[in-house]
Image (tube, rainbow, N blue to C red; front, side):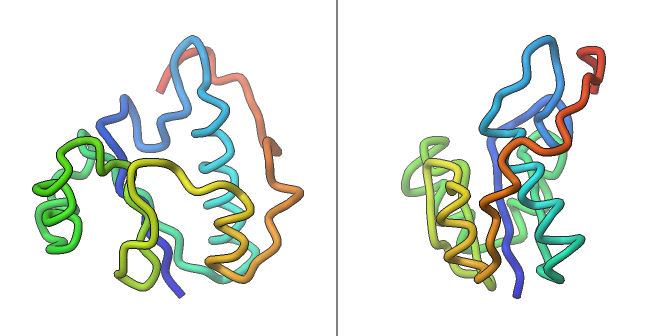
Length: 117
């Protein structure tokens, strides 16, 4: 199984940087790390500023952006099919989509990065 997230332009690959950390991005980062490391799910994230080529090479992503503009982002794909657009999936949605319980993942792994990417 593969879950892929196409995100708006972020300052770094995870978006978890800067003087204040967005709790939603922290949750997504932690959940994707958990899926990748413990569940054997291929979990990928692409953000527009870091990986523009990933956006341009995916026809479904291009079509969604063409139809809805930046409001389509973030886009969540499971096995190359769009399953959610315009908002990040919740832990419950990620658990349902991947068949992996992520209830304990919420903000595990919080660390101070000094506001630097």
